[in-house]
Amino acid sequence: MLTDPIVQEILIDITHDEEGSISVIECILCGVTSDFDIAEKTGINLTIIRKILYELHSAGIATYNRIEDPENTGDIYSWKFKQERICEIIQTKYVNILVEIEKSIKYEEENMFFVCKSDNHRYKFEKAADHNFECPICGDSLEHQDNSNIILELLKEKEVVSHMVKLDINSSNRY
Image 1 (cartoon, rainbow, N blue to C red):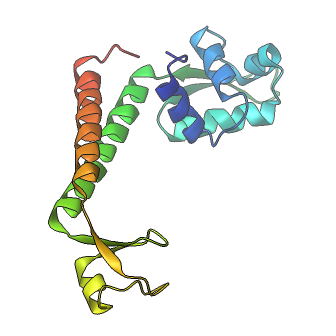
Image 2 (image 1 turned 180 degrees about the vertical axis):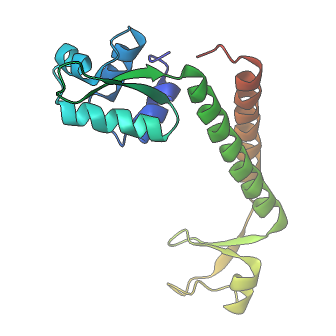
């Protein structure tokens, strides 16, 4: 699971690219559950480990049980990684990407664009017309842009992401 680049990207985003976050999760998955034991096994500073664990907890990916230390030096926290939550986060990410792609497709389909040959700035018809089809930045003439290739690329991207959404829905044990 942790070798999957999508899972690693999600975990790195959640832990704010904190070095060692993957190692911390690997420890939990291997049965090393206390923050002290994780620090001992990984050699990572205990404060950093706790920061990573609390970030994972805030995202709903890690849970903990608190146990009173019999030596009264504080509480011992035993952590557990919730793999199914990763699937939910990835699913949400794909759905959000799909929504953005669909918005982009609609935007491209509903608008006519003009582009400046000099600086490649792109303008919707209304703005181009307001400036007499001259670039408001450099003054060169604007030319109609055929955006059918952009739409085709967005449709291809939509197909790929749609497939990933279906894959994650239908394959909950992928991760």
